[in-house]
Amino acid sequence: MNDSSNLSSSISSGLSPEIRALLQSRREMFSQASVPSVLPELHRRIRTAAMERTSLRQTLRTRLSEWAAVLLDLNPAARLSYAGAFAAVALALFVGLQQSWKSGSANGADGAPLLTLNQAAGQAADNTGADQKVSYSLNNIDNASALPVSLDQKIDQVMADADDLSHDAVSAHYVLTRAPASYDSVVAF
Amino acid sequence: MPASSHSPEESDQELVRKTQEGDIDAFDRLVERYENKMRVTIYGIVLNHHDTQDALSETFFKAFRSIGNFRGDSEFSTWLYRIAKTTALNAWRKTKRRPQTIQTPEGDEEFNENNNFIDTNISSDVVRQMGNQELQNKLNESLAQLSEDHRTVVTLFDIQGLSHAEIAQIMGCSEGTVRSRLFYAHKQLQKLLRNYI
Image 1 (spheres, one colour):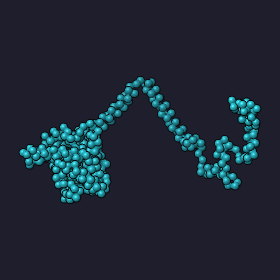
Image 2 (cartoon, rainbow over the protein chains, first blue to last red; image 1 turned 180 degrees about the vertical axis):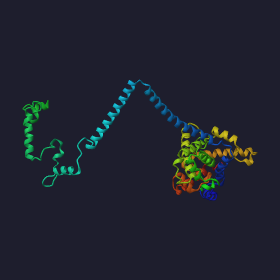
Image 3 (tube, rainbow over the protein chains, first blue to last red; image 1 turned 180 degrees about the horizontal axis):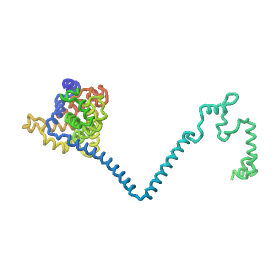
Image 4 (spheres, rainbow over the protein chains, first blue to last red; image 1 turned 45 degrees about the vertical axis):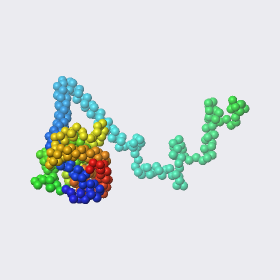
């Protein structure tokens, strides 16, 4: 097949006719040789694979029938208790799955109730002030429920907190307005 | 490669269809039809007879298991060559990991002793036979020094006589790539065998 084109290609690519002949002798080498056919080995492999598949099915079937036979040979009380246990497990599984499905469909991934798109849009609008600017105070989790406060109010709040601290012996030093007389020596020490 | 050229009675497609319907004899006929071509191709890549026989059996076993999925998008021969190439390259990689040389392996010596395949017309010329055998060994050594892609392309083109288009389909690359690989492979082979031919 394509011998003439192969020859011209071989010549143009610099492969000498001797090497080309040597390469082609490979084809003849196998056609003349008494090499054993692959068919017996192939049939053996196909049979083995089929038997492995069959034996796997057979094993499963045997195990299941053995298990059923053992179950059927049990006395009625034991059979009843097995059946009861099986029913209890199946019921627990069913109830668990149902609960999981219910909570999954009602809540989001974090367990919070799911909102409709309109509800979410309404909440987003609440964060917008009269001047159509968004208040970022809600982004602070500590002040999540607080309304925007003025700077004076914030200073008052801080001072009030400082007064509270001053009653606490441990943290009193945070609110001292002036260093004690021995401050320098203490620092130097 | 037209499928009808392999058999006047049944085309590859017909045998494939029968195999897909569970006729194992039809697959046997496909094996008989392609066994030698696949053996030569695999030997060209793995370069020893023992691994060739194993890879050949593996190739047809894989083909038998997957023939249900063969939809006839390409020729059956192209599909089979592709399986053979992949299986042979896997065998070659395994051989390379084994601590042994590829030159004159035991299986090959036995094969050569049992088969006067080199030139049946000059079987009395022992000296020439030995010379040819040495050349075959040198060819194996040289082929082993080529990259996997170069060796495969030389096997399919120079030994099997496939066209660039068929090789491109088998190797999953463009015809230009096949030509380029062939050019460099030939150049390297010429250089490696310069002192022996």
